[in-house]
Every structure is written in structure tokens, then in C-alpha cells.
Length: 451
Image (tube, rainbow, N blue to C red; front, side, top):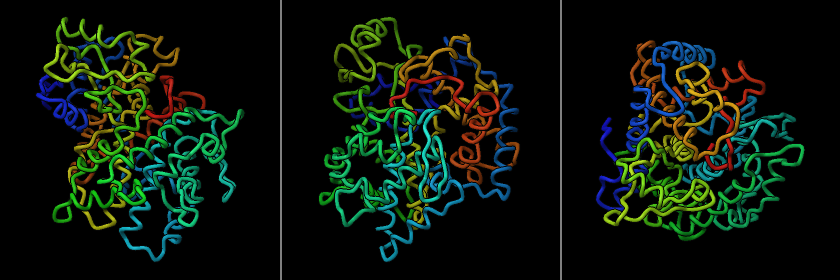
């Protein structure tokens, strides 16, 4: 890991943007905060790496219980569509009978993309009753089933005779009332961030029109990204990082109120003052960024381009959680087309509240102040950025410890399987053991677009 890389060292806005959209940058920037945590120089958390073995044992027990045959799938949206043992994907395949493999992959991309973008935390009060099975689901599984049913009903299509698709016009015309109805939202069944989810999908519709080279000129669809990625494969191989780069380029403009460089929306990228360079840079950053409220989700701060009076600051920390979750969810349809996905472990673990909660609940991470647990934090807060950054690096450490204990290598047990097997499920389980309704140990102010 090169801990010397920083945005301000890059020579152009294009270089800085490309860097901050890369998995390398996630590990670089989170790694710098991790090194400060090891030296106990962070404000909110410290690490206790002596707990790594305990965490690994807990995760291995969950993995072996859930997948006793050792056949662990990728951590992706597809697992959620089968919740309750209902073969929903087989139902979808029957509806797609007669279509070519590429056409089926395009449809699966459509479904995965819209469902992942609707997957931010639902809150602990929301429920979804699937009328087809008379089953009730919560959280990610409930969001998955709700989005699956809406997709099959044509809620994201503008073509009444082509229901099984997502297209630009269908997304742009999506209303809050339509999504609320599809997700069964009411005063008694509130969904966190409903308006933010609708805005996100409407912006996706506009982005499809802005990138015809990715999503097609005629009837732009998110699923047309399949064709774009097939063209970038070589000898039936496609790097996972290439899929992530396409997701970040094609969907980058949909995130609301985020940091920008030279007019380009960076997405899930935030500020942590411990990474700022000199006092001079910090002072100028404070002046240019304005107050914390002005930097919030309601305003897009545009960093000046390099070589101006204020260079791109070193304090930026990228995560791209939903984009990586989406990338993981797009890999299976590509594999079904015969592509080999290379460089799986170039992508990072997902810095969300289940993985981060696992680290806190098993004391691999320790809060320095108890008031962290007593009030809700915004996603751009120093507490949350610090928590997420440390989670990214600790997931790598947990994965390495698990492989060592199981005598397996990264090819046999890639990070994407450890997440599924895995840390996410273990984080949910320990939360349920410790708190009513299995809520996150740290409460979050979510707008429906990050967690």
C-alpha cells in the first residue's frame, strides 16, 4: 500500500478524478486513517488488533453454518432476491424465455442496478408484505423483494408492452407516490429516505441520456452497460475494476449534494481533517469549504482545479459503497455470458453499518467517547467517515486472518465471498444479540443514498 499518494500530488483534474474513483484510492486514503488509528491519533476510534482472531472465529462460525458445503456465492443483490426460499429468479427466467443470453443479461443488469440503488438502509420500522407469498420481509431483503416485484410489474419502464426493462423515460417519470405505493410506505410503515431514493432514480434516468456510449442512443437502459463491458473484455476476461470504473463514470452524476472537482460529481467521497496536509492548506480549506452546514448534502462544493490558489485537498476519503455493491452484483450476469472476472480482490470491503458494526460489537474497533452512541450522525460527519475508513482496512485484515485459519488463499476465498459468508451476516447476527431489532451500534441520519 502506498500511503504517500494524495490528490494534491496529481497533475490535472482528470488525474485526480480517476484516482479518487479507483479501488486503490479507497485503500490508500482509508489506509492513512488506519495508520493514525494504530498510533491512537484519531479523535473518535482506536483499533485493538488483538481481537482479530476472535472476530475471524465468529465470522468463520457464521460462514460454516450458512454454507456448510463451502460453496459461498458472491456478496451481491442476487442472494436477496431468493429470500424465504422463493425461486423468484427462476420465475424471471421463465418470463425471459426465448431471449438471447445477452438480452437476458441486459434485463438482469436493469433489475440489479435499480434494486441496488434502492438498497440504502430502510430503517427498523419498515416492513414489506409480499402478496404473492403472504410473507413479510424487512431491511435489505424487503427492499430487494419490493424492487423485484415493481420491476416485474413494469414500474420502471415507459413501454406498456415491454414491462421487464428499466429505461430513461420510465425512471424520469417515476414519482414519489409510485415508489411509496410499490414499497407499501405509509405513516405506520415509514421508509427512511423515500424522497432521496426517488431523486436518485430520476437522476439515473437523466444520466442514461448523458452517456449514450454506455447506455445506448435508442431507448437508453442501464442494462445496455452489458454491451459496453463486453467490448472492453479481452480473451473472455474482464477486470472487476473495469466494471467499477464504468459504474462510477456512468452513474457518477446521480449523487446529490456531493463534493465535485472541476464540475465532476465524486459521489461517495468525504472529508476527514486528519488527512489534511499543512496548516496552510487546512486554513484555506476552511475558508473555501465554508461552514459545516454549507458543506452538507444540500450543497455541491466545487474544488478549484489544480494549479489554482487552492489545490485539491489531501483530506478526501473515497468509499463508493453502493457503487461497489452494484459492481459485485453485476459480476454474476457477466460470468453467465462466459466472462472470467479477474482482480476480484482489487475491490474493497463495503463500509456500511453491518461490517462496521461487526468491528465495533466485537471490539476490534473501540469508540473513544461514549456519546458517539447517544445521538445520530450525518454521513459526512467526522465520526462516520472515520468509522467507515477503518472498516475498509479491517475487512482486509479479517479476510487475511480467516484465510490463514482455513489454510486458503485469496483465489480460493476472495473478499467478495468473505463478505457474503461472512462479515455482513455476522454483523447482523451480533447486532441482533446485543440490541433490540438488531439496529446499528451507531445511529445514522440517512438520506437513502449512502447506507
